Amino acid sequence: METLLALLERSSIMANMNKLSPERRGQVARALVEGNSIRATCRMTSVAKGTVLKLLADIGDLRREYEDGLPRALGAKRRSEIAKKAGSTRWQRS
Image (cartoon, rainbow, N blue to C red; front, side, top):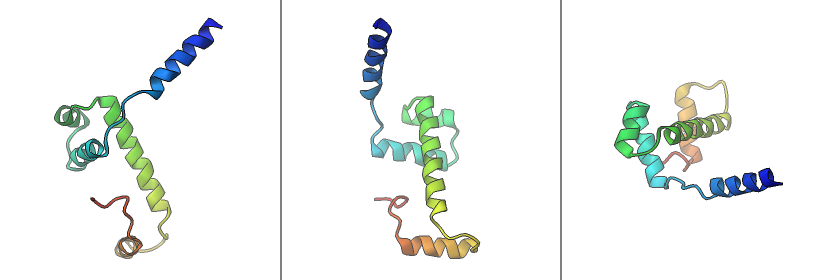
């Protein structure tokens, strides 16, 4: 019973963890896209290395979902035209 209470207490701690704001996530993503290393990105943005790695994995998952929605066996130019016509706001700056 005590271990169950300890687990419930820990899970409530996990639920209350801070999340990066969209602006901060964008700052980290831009630093990585510009070619900065993970460690340099951590220093520049004051974000923990584990958080940067998790964000990088999330970005990869989003990209895979986006790419899976595009037609296959088209040239790169044609795919980019389709993506522009689709007006995907996920990747556009606001």
